[in-house]
Image (cartoon, rainbow, N blue to C red; front, top):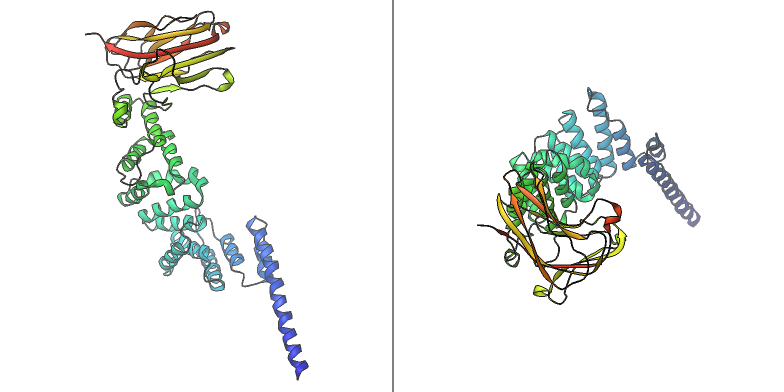
Length: 425
């Protein structure tokens, strides 16, 4: 009797081992099917007919091309494969989502689709494969607010999908309900790693300005996480690029804090007391590659106002310098630009000076300060400017003077401070 029990146990162990081997081999073929190996999912099902993932992959491969005339028989065959996958594994969420999207795309009217879609969404809220199929289901069923939600969560799991999904988000923004979903995201987009890429996409897309305006408005209305500097920069840069200079300037001004507003005039922060802005706005741009041997900084030296002055140091390399500048919005009129300068052992052929030129419009306007070289104490300088109506925006730039390569070979330091632009009455 004992030996019969032992034989029975041995047979159970052998049977279990056989199932384990079959499942292991089926898993191997399923993995190769995911990599695109032809008919690998069929080999997996030969080894283990109830392999849910292999069933789902096989059903996907049996789907018709929905861009062409759909075969009802092929749709029904694929749907049966997805149902079998769920039967083999009740948590096969990708099969659930596939039933919903296949039903919607083929108009197969599977009554279980809404329930399966809801269950898949709850079980896999950020799984890209699931959320992509639920997006298709929501779009074809006219539920644009749900489509927006599914797209947002697809991108949570797959941020690199922005190239294909950002245009869809932009088109969905025309729907009020879908825009409401995007507004919820905009309240606090820190969780959504794709958000800044989406703003950048709108800022560079030829048709994206209106959508960008809407997105910035949504962010401005956030009571949770305010609009960030990068978002502001993309918006202002796009406005400037499209010629909406006044709008860009007003938006930039409205983003200044109380201390920054004290430094606002026809020229912003002429004392170089604030960090360089280096954005598409109307503050100072001051950056250059260290490989040029040129260093731009805000530093303290004797005679500096408010403990800061602009300092530009040259190392003797032949580099055309024009890397400190500010965009201006001077109305038509006559102005004087003045300031203080101190060259410190600055050697070269022609020197460095300010150039104010037209940044938009149809004029060749250009005004220059004297160029500076040598060594000396702080001294005042000024030059007069006449802005015509044909020059709605301008740029003030510190440049090395000259047209030949050797003219831009400079050694030494230049200090500048207390710049201002005043309107002549």
